[in-house]
Image 1 (cartoon, rainbow, N blue to C red):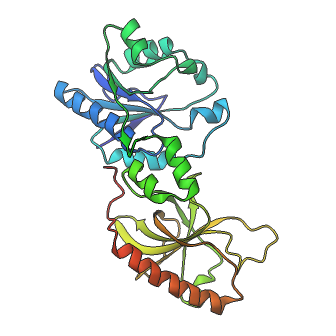
Image 2 (image 1 turned 135 degrees about the horizontal axis):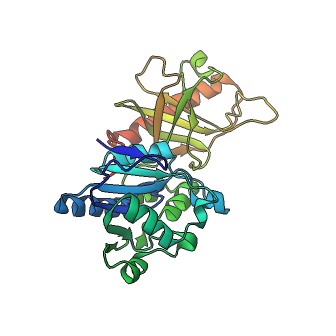
Image 3 (image 1 turned 180 degrees about the vertical axis):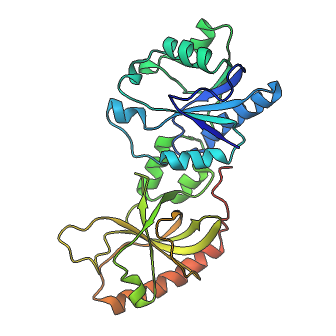
Length: 316
C-alpha cells in the first residue's frame, strides 16, 4: 500500500536506505512512468523502499507563469497509487522552499531525511534553486549517491512531455494526448448539483466541479465516466449550455449523461475520460430541439465508444 508523507512527517523508512526520484509528474504520462518504473525496479533489486518526491503545487505557481495542470494533486496521487511505489513524499512548495539550493536539498532531504542511496531522474529532470540539481550535479558532488538518468520517451518522433500534452488537449487533439499519456485525457472532480434541467427532458446529467485546470475545447464528447470502480459510457458537454443559460455571464460547466444509469452521485468523486469530440456546442431554439440533438449525440457516441474499451484509469 502506498504511503504518503509531507514536510512535517518523518520518513516511514527512517534508518533505511532508499531509492528516490523527484518531479512534479503532472499528468503521470508515459515519460514519468518510465522513470517511476525504473525507480521501482532498481529498489526491488536492492531490496530497498522506492520513493517519489513531488510537490503540492506546480513550482511555477509560486515563481510565476504556471501552466494549467493536467492533474490535480489528488489525481496524481491516485495515478501513482496504481504503481508499485512504496511511498510518495509531497513537499509543500512555498516561496521560501523555492530558494533551497540543490546542495541544501540533497544534504537536508535526500541524505539526512531519506537516506537516499540511488537517485533516478529523467533526461531533463532537475531540482533545487534555478533547477541547478541534475544527474551531472549529483555525479560531480556526491559520489556516495548512485545517480541514474532515464532517457526520454519518444512517440511518433515527439518527446513525451506535459507541455506537449497540454498543447494537444487544448487544441482538441485527444488521440495525440492519449498516446503520450498512455490513457485517455480525463477530468476528475466532485459531483455537484446543477440546474437539473437535463432530467426534465429525459437526460439527467452528472455535473462535475473539477479539480483540474486543463480541459479540451468546448463541445460535446463521447466519453467514459468512472464513479468508484464502475465505468459508464457517456456523453459530456463542456461549455456554457447556451440553450438553457440565460444569464448575462455564463460559467463554464462539465455535464455528463451516463448511459443506463440511475441514482444519486452528489458529493461523490467522478472522472470523465474524453474519447472523441462529436460536435461544437451550439444554442438551440428550445428544449425540444435540444432533446432531439442529444438523442442524435447519444447514437453517435454509442458508435464511437463501441470501438473503444475503457475499464481502468491506471497508467500503463
